[in-house]
Image (cartoon, rainbow, N blue to C red; front, side):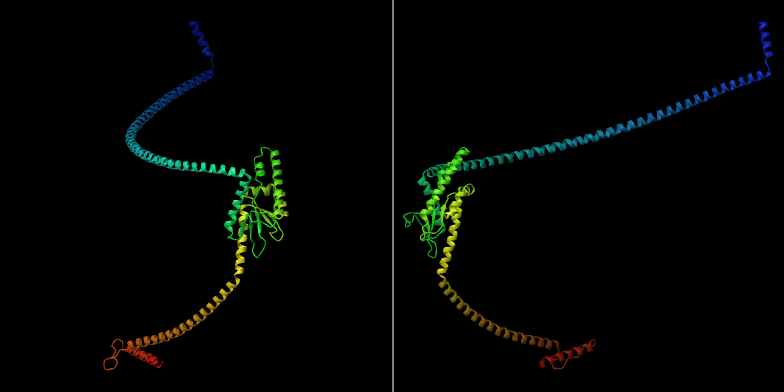
Length: 407
């Protein structure tokens, strides 16, 4: 130990003062550093404590705020619970009222629907009765159609059917004596109808026969070939019929140069003009006019107008005599009206003179009424408040009175 202490003393003695100063400075710096670290640690712990206390305060404040908010929420929840309860009771009441109203409306609607259903069923029964009656009528009409088909299937009866329709149109449009049915011509032929023309012109011939068999064959054709064959047959029958009419009924000087071929159907007439134009052209060249019921009716109306015009011309001298008598009556009426006008003119002049005299008398009476006389004949004295005005008025009245007297 002594040796060690001696060696340490020698080593310490051998250290220079500068080294000692340096060592002392380092030691001092270390001590200062330790002190600074300790101070910083203390301040850091103090700040942490302050921060912890601040955080604890904030936590308490937040906790208090949360408690306050919770209390408010509980109050609001209680208020909302009361409101919801009241609303729910009101809603239940409203729903019950609406359900009662809906049940009443449903009951009334069901009652009305039941009543309407009964009424509709009653109307349906009435309509069914009408339908039954219509069905009976349809059955009757079907029987008539069957009878008509039987008529049309027979050639003679078919011709009678077309002739009866033509005769009906002619008889409805022309007066008696203007036409004749089945009249015999000089060549022995008997046309279906002849219409007498005015001014002694030859009559117009109407033929009511029509080749309906060939037409029905066209309508009943099941294939284009059969339809073509039926169309050719119909064209030949029409050409033969047109030639027969031209040879039998167009007689020079005895009948008109034109004859009518009556077709008893508007649809057949349209089909002929649409699909059989050569037949129509040939008929025109032969001076045969193909007419439908409407065209025949129009032609009859034209003939009726011509006959009426002829009758008017035949009675022209009677009309002229009546017009002359009417003109004489008009001349006498004009003379008497002019005399009456003269009497009215004189009466008007007398009335104007009477009115003029009445106007004069009225003005004169007004002027006299404007004057004021006393019993002795002298004018009354004027009042003190208007002497000049009264005097001027009296003089003016006298002046006007004198002027009227001069008139």
